[in-house]
Image (cartoon, rainbow, N blue to C red):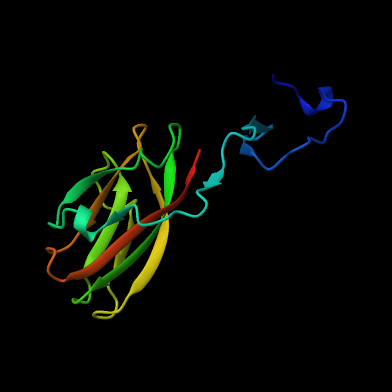
Length: 158
């Protein structure tokens, strides 16, 4: 539906906070486009997981990008996952990174470098997943300097 403001009964719109808006203008007019998303996008808290979803023993630690299939936990239709990562590495600067499966650049990633040697560091964030609910992870080095890695899926975005 497309209407001019002068054609509306009221110049106000009932917005719910789930809209996307785009505005453009030229020398004679302003165009505002509002797309109603409904309540279909949101965060789903997982609740109280009983343990880690991935840990050092289940990971390939080889300074290369590896696949992590999260579909056993994350339902179909999810677009991203929220992770909590606990890591300990003996070497300062060693990285643990996550990205959407299929991405090739290392710009849109969730990453952390070990700040202090042999100290437990807890961090987290959001990582996009593909339609099969696959993400990729990368850990610098080999298994030897990694004392522990534990990852929990906190929730997901639908």
